[in-house]
Length: 213
Image 1 (cartoon, rainbow, N blue to C red):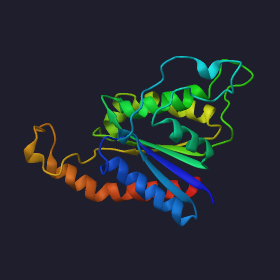
Image 2 (image 1 turned 60 degrees about the vertical axis):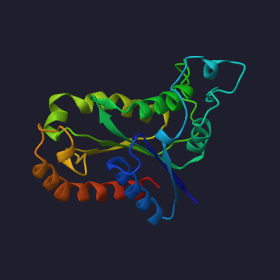
Image 3 (image 1 turned 180 degrees about the horizontal axis):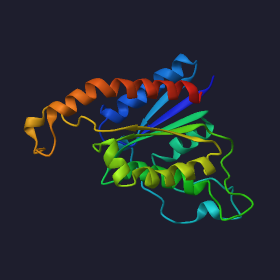
């Protein structure tokens, strides 16, 4: 049986990112696959420490030397048949947790060789899910597709498979906007957008999960 691993880089265990990932997992399960959800913010780990153990000639390449909560996750990713990385966008970048995950996964499978660009053991179909307060117009204005495209391009090379992506714009952040200073937003407009658009994005997530496996 094939297996899809969904990695959430959101500190909110049941927020927009997790909801999209769970729809993708249902799609994979309906296609006959086993699924696993990894909540990065429930783990104790760091990003890459630049020890270069993964580049040494006297040890197998592709192994991160750090022994923490992320180490077994990285091993399960190598054994999986599909991977989805979901993260909110904070200050126009991936969340810190997702960046640390990417550092550990990508750098340990990249070696400084023109002949061997990646030591990842097999092609791994994968996708990025992005959730953000920005509108689609903001994404174009600030060049976010180009910025996030750097991660997508790296993923395609190092995981040896094309990258899929899903952008969830203009997310509804609070259960009660009156409790927070958020006057730059129109809650009614955000609520209407979520009601109309978010179900379509959940359906897209479902289809991506199903297609990856």
